[in-house]
Image (cartoon, rainbow, N blue to C red; front, side, top):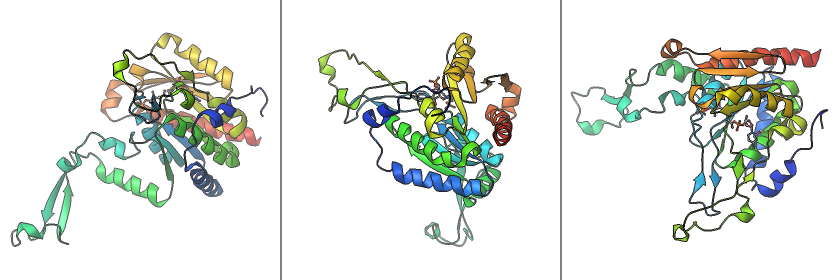
Length: 328
Ligand code: PMT
């Protein structure tokens, strides 16, 4: 265990959270991905993204969820790819995804039209044959050609490894597997923990098996604290990596104090602090020695600027500095 580390609650992870069936296979894929890219001189970032679902019943009808759309994780993943990183994208099932996130609200069928070559000579039934073309309305899918080209280049280069989670248990075990897999590449690994992870859960042993009956009257539930993953990640699973956590508050008054407390407690490299309502336009990157405010004004926002580009630029520079220090 690294110097300054407190004993982690890793044991609880194994005992209290169901291990997803595919975790060893996914860990193998993440390790191979990291080894290949580090071998080719690339850095690798694990981006976590989206919220977590906490079941209230074993045969789950109801669960607790949170607001996170996954936009921050998905857009940051794109900017890391643009900066030359290989990206493991650990994301909530159906949350926003790199590249397609830009068109999340679009009804695809409204953006496409069918054009049949020689349409005037042939009956409608020829549609679906080899002469059928689907045309894209680029006003409905802005920048689609360049986004598609970037997506295809990333796919052909094998630069993006998507890994999905649904429940809190999935997330916790897959994060551990990713951290252990990335340990082999030392300081070339970055963790960018943008997912909004539940702090509370009901242990399997205390959960009702069947649907909670409303005929029993108002519901009272008692939830336990989820063990903080930052502690074993930094101390045991990937102690040489460059680790960035996020801090979300609704009260801006306490934001910086909470971010500094997290840095003191977990001894990782930086916290990206944000307030729920202003998170698209303002964040503060807090390190042991510095605080850096990043902003996107409304005008910049209208022109297409995204704060994630600024966050990723700042962190990739800090990562370079970190690697140089580790090698010195
Ligand atoms: O997805 P969007 O809608 O774009 O929103 C982006 C965001 C607001 C979700 C993102 O910017 C953000 O702030 N994510 C972190 C939210 C959060 O869970 O904050 P927290 O203060 O509760 O947790 C702090 C850190 O502890 C997080 O980095 C988390 O990964 C980590 N954590 C949390 C729980 C847990 N059991 N173990 C952990 O290590």
